[in-house]
Length: 439
Image 1 (cartoon, rainbow, N blue to C red):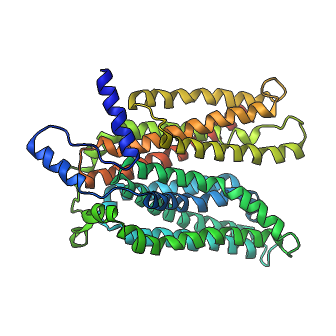
Image 2 (tube, rainbow, N blue to C red):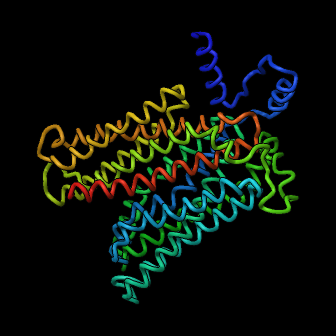
Image 3 (cartoon, helix red, strand yellow):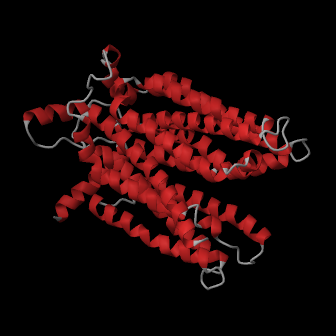
């Protein structure tokens, strides 16, 4: 048993470094399949950086909207800030369900084009609507502004679904290190928003309609980075030796006659059955996280007890979450791994954070919930475990599928859906929890 565990650990480390595992002594057919896999050139740090950029671009537009949500809510009213996550989550879930069953019938480049295009265009259009139709705007019709903003967010969500699932599907065809760096990129997308927004507020301090221009430039920055991904994939990523080997899977896709023509050896439901344990694990991680965050953390109070102190404290503790979550996502790169069965138990054990966060919100004058440092500490452990467990699930999921690249790609789409659906369900349960507790 010890020897088996040692070999498993060595294999995982080699995969994280982009090194293919040595062939097993099995049947002749299996040996030939392994030899074909070994023909792939090694993954380089430049390729990992590109996967990191894809992860960043997939999530940064939405994270930037959340960062400036107070401003947008003040523009559109009608409960925009509290309901927009539901519209976004529904749209992403619908789009990703479609991609699970039909996504691998299309080549990767057009999907990157469409995903990035939708993200870039409707991110900026949302800022334009906020500048022109809303409170204190040339048109003060907040109802119309709210409706147009929801349309922008829904179309942005479709772009996110296409971009994120494409990045995860592509990473599923590569060693686990590629999936790891997509997750790290998404974490970075959450970290950089707040510092950039603070910097823009300083730069535009003397500009008329400062908040409007800050929002426009803030969103435009992500759109520029997003548009840069389109030529990056076609000119750089697809030309990388390892990716040329991987993308050989696409050679027959343009010849597919209809969406009903299956691109995988087995039906999709059998692939989903293989990845179900890790998909459930990833889903539970994000569901637990979004029951607590941000629905409970928005109810926390600063140690000083004043509204002004609390308004400053909430963004700080949120930023703590973003940093710690990114650290957790990066942790597998330094060898912090966990077998799959203990990982599921660990993920479910995170449910202990739910009563902890509720008590922190309900009893702000009771020690230790009274202390600001304690809130930061619990947030650090909460976020690191979120980033680590979600990343490990995403890395393990496609590996549960037999050595069939087309099926591993579908597994990547299924894992992406499990993350987003966990966020959506967790957000709904978090809102319900707040309502039931009368917070």
